[in-house]
Image (cartoon, rainbow, N blue to C red; front, side):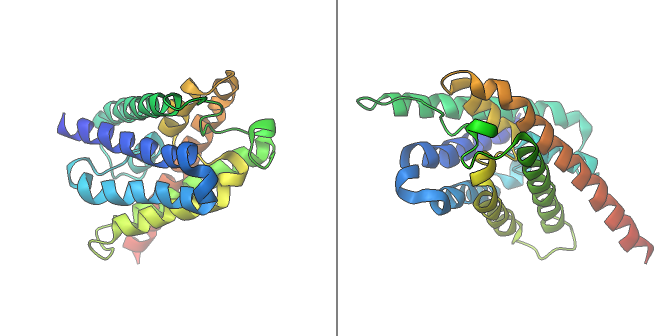
Length: 227
């Protein structure tokens, strides 16, 4: 239960910190500020709760680590449930904050989208490719930074900065997901129902990218062991 609780609170902080920065302060801090906010949530949780649960904070990360042979399948479903519930709880808190302002409205609520709901009006294909490739690279960073042969104590920095870079690249395309729990939590509260209709992409693409990264990393490690 300690591990699952850590995933709940870690994902809670990721959604509250990252999406909160976008919804509450986005007009002032811009894309760079929002990108840093997401990276900082991962960085802070990696060093505060990572020793308890590994600080996955993301169903795609848990699946990718499992595919890469670095995570036990028996914990996979409980981790995913804890992450989704943590994200939804954070989105609920954020909704209460936003609606507590005179004239405050939920609106798009930092939800992810493509087509007319993409910040840059990018197509569904562009959105899928972006989410899959960005998640793929995110998992490669995570798997590499947490490898037993990697420099000790720096994984959280590499992963946090990696997520920051991912947001800098992909916010204009999809508002950046690479995390089904983050997307589910915001889609539930966004006005109009459009986010729920597009949610499939922000579940399928990150999982596809994460699975491929797990497979590729295992192949790289097998080749390294054979040398």
